[in-house]
Image (tube, rainbow, N blue to C red; front, top):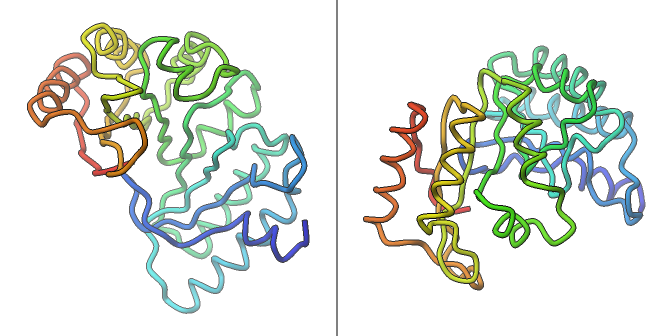
Length: 236
């Protein structure tokens, strides 16, 4: 992939991210056109630095620097070094703006990656499923075991962990009584500092928002089970 195009894939925005606000997105595992091959650390950090400098000099407002991606950002072999560099860039150009990690699910087996997570002011993880069946529907049949993901996440004990969940009915139904019991047990185990709830965007194939009464019931159970504050963030 040409360098100019790769730079566009690595740094995006700023744009509005649900639950975060106006964020500059950094994608360490952006698509390079080759499976399992990710942009080099130098390209990621240099491109991010250039954009942050441009924005700062133009007095553009920013609410977060978000490390994210459709592929787990922690899959990048230089994730820790990238994180440390982005933290320093943020301190210099946007000292009041938090560095956030946003992911659907994290692979926290690598000790360096786990250590790097502590650098982030907020760690937002999408946990939509309580059972392996729904987890596989959401993440594909090749997804690792939900049990392993949760065990790793619980071990990190991030003090500013935010769990995001998109509640839906239809082809993927994660609001059944059985699914909710399992999901609430997961929340109790990972002990989030906040839970952000959403519904599918209108027109999402095979998924629709549950009735408001059902959503209110779930929100009340989350508060009862975890004690964590809830934020409704619209659509995901």
